[in-house]
Length: 320
Image (cartoon, rainbow, N blue to C red; front, side, top):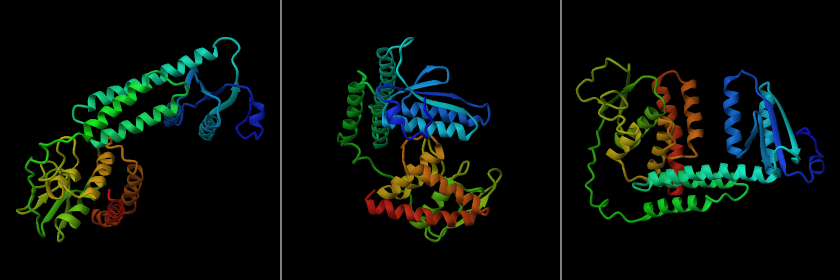
C-alpha cells in the first residue's frame, strides 16, 4: 500500500497490474456518495467488492484515483489507494472480462441511443453520440467486442444528418412581423431563459422594447402588450423548446451565432442536455452570479445583456 503523496510510487508498484481504491464515506454530506459514484463511473472503475473499486494500473488511472481519494478525505471520509496483484479470489482474466462486460453494456447504450435518433437525427444528436462514444472508448481498457458496432451506429446517424433533405428548403417559413417599441411582459425573478430572451428582443427584434415584470399568476395584459415566458403568453415554451428558441424561430431563424446561444439556453433552462453544449456550465454559473448580485429584474436584464453580447460576438467570430 502507499499514500498518494509518496514520491516513490513508481518503484513501489512496479510489476502490479491493478489499482484498488478502498473507501468509507460518511453519511453526511448527502451529495458526497453521489459525487463519488459518478466519478467512479466516469473513470470506468469496476466494483470489486462493496466500497472496493479497481482500475488497470497506469499513470492516468493513478491520477484519477488520487484526485478522488483527496475529494473523499476533504469531506470527512476515508480512502486507501493501493497497487495490487491478485493471488486468489479473482484472476486477471476474470477482471478483464468484468471490464469488457462493463464496456459492452455502455456501447449497447450508445447503439440504442443512435437507433432512436436515426429516424430524425439532428446535429445535437451527433455531438452527443460522438462525445459519449469518445468517453466510452477512453474507459474501454481491454478492447470490448461491441466497440465497432457502437461506432457504426454513430456513423449511421452522422450519415443521416448529412443526407440532403430536398423538401426542407421548400417548406414555407412563417416569420412574425418585428414589433416596434412594444411593452414586453414577463414574470418576476428573471433567470436564464427570460434574461436571454429579453436580450434578443432588445437587440434583434424590437430595439425600442420596454420590459414589465409581473407576478407569475393573475396579471391581465394591457392592449398591445406582448408576454414572453409566461403562462398563455404570446411567446413561451412550445413542446420541448424554451422561449428563446421560440423567439428565434419566429423572428431571426437564420443567425448561426444566435442558434448556438439558443442551444446553450435550452440546455440550462430545460436541464435535459439535449444539445450537450460544453459552454452551458460556465454560462449557467455567470447567470447565477447575475441573479445573486442584482435583486431587481431590470438590473438583471441589463447585466445579462453584457454577457450575451460577449457570447454573440465570440460565436459570430467563429462562424458558429
